[in-house]
Length: 414
Ligand code: F6P
Image (cartoon, rainbow, N blue to C red; front, side, top):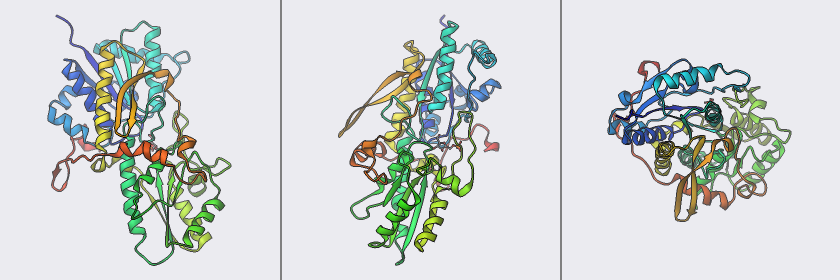
């Protein structure tokens, strides 16, 4: 009798609303193919410590899979762990491949962003070098939308929908008093402004907003920002600025560092927990313009707000997880599943694959044609690109007035 296939899946990097929908897609498709599904607890870092869960036990039914897809944060836990170059340190690879053999793993799936694709690329390369039959597949996710080789990444559409919704609501709130004020909304996206740009999706004929969008791709001077705010305040009461957490001045310094001091870096050399751009800008604009000013940091809400998720995003995330299994079972390895846009109006996509080596560690930023000429807004090309990604709503069922979630793996610890 043929051995039952075993697959191992992990999640890595910052969570998104859609990362568990991809996990649900992986599990559902693997199960439909009769495979046994194991999960890495806390990504590759946890796996090195033999932290493994049996997902056939933890997520046993179709109902549990549905709940998983609507549960925020990374169900399996996450890490920001960088595997060393095997030529310099082979020990982690020996541990991991030993574990794969012990568990009878046929394929490994890693749901993550560009740093996580570095992990799967290294495992695939090591496996190929050692003639391992194990397949390694990346499933993309990141609210930053900065992965190469895919039209967009799961997680982005939901975060963008939350940002657009929140900015629209904040714009109404900011306009209630008959006095001059500035509101600065800080939005995640370390080095890429895709998510900050999505604030433009809040704009309507009744309430055009935001008035300025500051992106990491378009460094600014404080003089230019204050100058534009001051000019706008001549004809209106309120100026709303959507600012990326990663916006820099023209010398390359992060604005949030000017306000809060140096930011720590992770194993991949990326700044972590950027915070303070809105407070810094609000305080500067208050003193320069002499108006009321407030900073609002959307922070982790923008990647955790499943109650405001985009249906398009969650559906695509599920499909990419399932496509990862299909690709691995067809014998593909060293690849990441991608979304290819066929058309924007009507919105049509298809799923493809790309060599993981082309994706790992690379970054896709907002292109110049989507950025306004003064660098403080976006063009219609961005709106046409982003609008379909936030379409559709999901309705998690409620228990005691709040959305029901799949119970956490270690309920006492979270
Ligand atoms: O994964 C990308 C991201 O969500 C960035 O937008 C943000 O800067 C970063 O993660 C925050 O990471 P952490 O939760 O580790 O502080």
